[in-house]
Image (cartoon, rainbow, N blue to C red; front, side, top):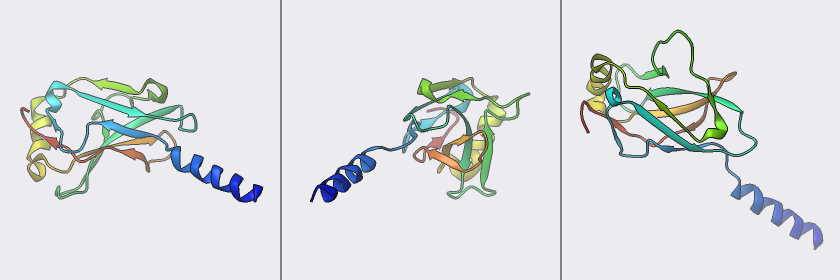
Length: 133
């Protein structure tokens, strides 16, 4: 009986502990990338200490989008996971407009990835990119 209760308790605790979760941008948000991009997230102690971000759209964009965010800079931006938020400066209207034109700007996501693994640790809800929101 004691073993069963202990197992049940551990299962409940594990179910309540989730890893990195992106909270913003959220599902159906409108984002004008020329005005910047703020990403917020919740994390737990077992998440990597540093993450980076990718802008993706596998939800109708042709061709699909999967690129580092922010776009091509001299070096990748590595973010301290414990901070829970990071603001990126705006990109040019040409870059923002080009992304807004893909799939009418719909279906974009931000992925948080670790430095050593390109797979998503977490992804935001699907949001829309527009020239003005």
